[in-house]
Every structure is written in C-alpha cells, then in structure tokens.
Length: 171
Image (tube, rainbow, N blue to C red; front, side, top):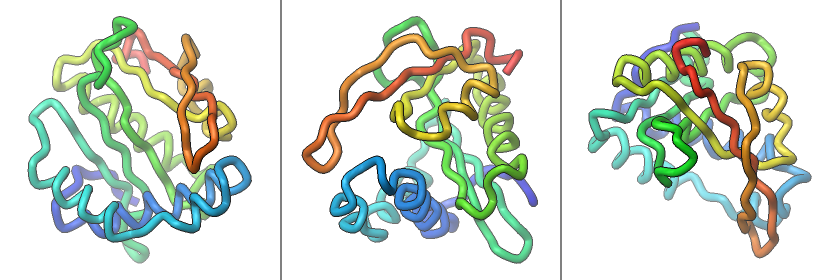
C-alpha cells in the first residue's frame, strides 16, 4: 500500500471510494433513501474540479493498493469557517470498508497532517456525525471533541461533533 498525493486522473477512483464509504459508513445512520440517491457522476465532477484547481494550502492524498487501486483518501486545508482558533481542517477521510482496521486510515491521517504542517498549519479540526463509528478513530488519533452543531441530511436533523488537534505536529 502506498500513500501519495492525488492527481486529477484519480478523480473517478476517489469519487467511487467517497460514494461507497458513505453508503457503508452511514447505512442505518442517515436515511436509506438519501443514501440510495447518491450518485457517482456529481462526486466525480467535484473531484475533477477540486484536483485541477486545488489551492496551494489544500491537499488531497490517496491510499493506493498495488492490485486494487485507490482504496481511500483524505483531504484538508484551511479551516472553512475560521472559528474556534484552529488553522486547518480535515475536510474528508474515507476508506473502503474492507480496508478498515488495518492501519490505512492512520497512514492517511498522518500523511494529511504532515502535509498541513508543511503548509505552516499548527492546528487542525474536523466535523463528523456524532453517530459515525469513526469518532473512536479520531479520539485514538488524539482528537478532542470541543463543540457540536446540527446538520440536515435527507430531511432529517443530525448532530455533528468537532474534534480538534491544537498541536498538529504531535498528531
């Protein structure tokens, strides 16, 4: 398995991981109809645009298996809301279910954290659904929950938790 910087040619693979991960991670959490209606094409268009016009302070890394291709990705950059005193934000980290619990998520997390540090970010935060099992992963990676907010998916309200790393170099 290799962790590397994503390229525009990875857009479809990233979109597939993104879509499949949402369906496996959020099944039973988000409304089934909402998850069934998710489509690959809009996500692919998003990732094509994102990888072609990436801002210098943003990064996207992928986990690539020699035989299976891209199996996970993470993206980060400046905090989008500019609140709470955190400089960076982990926008997304997704991994195909069959590759979880094998250290790949940890490798993606460390790679994206290192990328942010190299771009002079001292701290990082992220938003995650409170019911997402990945909350345990973020805690294991040293994240501290510090606030919540309400979000809507498929016409239903959910709670998101913010986790933060004040000392990104230590993460």
